[in-house]
Length: 391
Ligand SMILES: Nc1nc2c(ncn2[C@@H]2O[C@H](COP(=O)(O)OP(=O)(O)OP(=O)(O)O)[C@@H](O)[C@H]2O)c(=O)[nH]1
Ligand SMILES: [Mg+2]
Image (tube, rainbow, N blue to C red; front, side, top):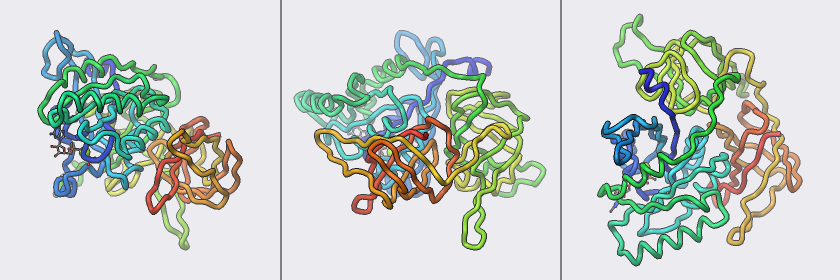
């Protein structure tokens, strides 16, 4: 157990265009299939974030078969590729340190290959590995051509110097090389002394039907600890908290509770520090966290979180490059903003070419300097057009 706590830990998201093989690759990397919801199985696509943890061992090769010495603890997050699920993908990107961008070699660069790379940038992620997948479907010449296309595509982006690793997720080809690249990702400095800050990406009820009341568990919050340390027994505060409708207006009520259990993946721990997919079991009534109702919230010890706000001032830049021209932001236009694991919609009140002030429909917990993804509604789809920082 202490071994788990002391293993260097990294959170990695799998991102990329729909059907390019993220979930299949994650299954090979972690040994687990993360698409489990009935709708996901029926449609063959990922809808919610998937979670799978693995311990990487170092022997002659890196492996997850317990050969050699434990080297790293990895929490993988599987993101959906469907264009309508970009907000979910962004919330996943908010809780990772690095990403694997999956590109199916037989299809090449597609709209969400590009959009997800931009999303990583908007979340401040700098470490990217590119998995050139489905190489079993193409010839050597096509693979070389696709490799060149990928190189061209990443020029001038955060993935400019990323390794491009040819794999077949389905056939299990070259997964070792991917493990090696994962082993080489630099683990960010973890700050365990600062005020704790946990961002919630999901909330759920873990009780089985028919559990007798005295054995009932409280609401569980899953996400990432960005800084600090949390211990069993700690008092915590959750913001914006629960929404209450009064006279047709939504109000938010901060929640106060206590930590009853802590988990890193499926391992129960007495305290947690940053790194890994973490879950906090609270003393809250289990009905409060049902169906992700608390996802997007921030959590800390009481009195430490900033007041929630519906008025936001940001500094921003648009993703203009030689291929895409993005129209400037306009006053009165509606934008979708992704802040940590939360998504909100805001109306532009004031704008210059570098800064903007927005009025938000759902309030956020504003941390100065936090990254923001900015999306605009284009032909009924939210498209990422820029990124910003809270002022
Ligand atoms: N031939 C071949 N097929 C693959 C490979 N990897 C994945 N597939 C197939 O591609 C299809 C899509 O795979 P998924 O892993 O569900 O793709 P995904 O990227 O997770 O899709 P979304 O989550 O919906 O974005 C499935 O039928 C897989 O069996 C591969 O390396 N080779
Ligand atoms: Mg998938």
